[in-house]
Image (cartoon, rainbow, N blue to C red):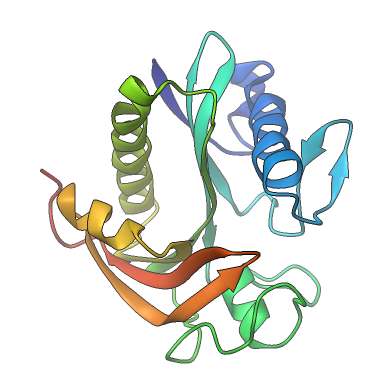
Length: 195
């Protein structure tokens, strides 16, 4: 099992890994979750997949097991910034504007974590290990990028898992309901060390 952080600068060194990650997102978010998202050639993408973002992937032999996208809160592309802020600004129909209990931050030390997934194809006996690999690389990459805080939307029960693995993860908004799936915006401090 390998963990790689992809960027527009290094993706050419990793063959099909970026495309395979977008295919795994398609399988997770469009096929399984039935979310209405942009897609092309069996790949899911959106306006936040820009050269400013990074993509953490857990993979083995080209098969993507898990992933997460990191986007700086300072980035802007046309009218878009990052998902949580754009939802708060009323630009996204699928995410309520009142998802965060504070004004969405714009700061170089705060990055957004989005499109987090673990493939359903990952066997139950490996899921925790895959999640740990993903979280560890996400934290390491975010710190390397200068982040001291991440914000994101995660399943409502995930803050307990995050705390269990040593992340300082606290709810930062009300519980959200996405087609029966309970989620919550969270703030993750990068100041603490993981176990």
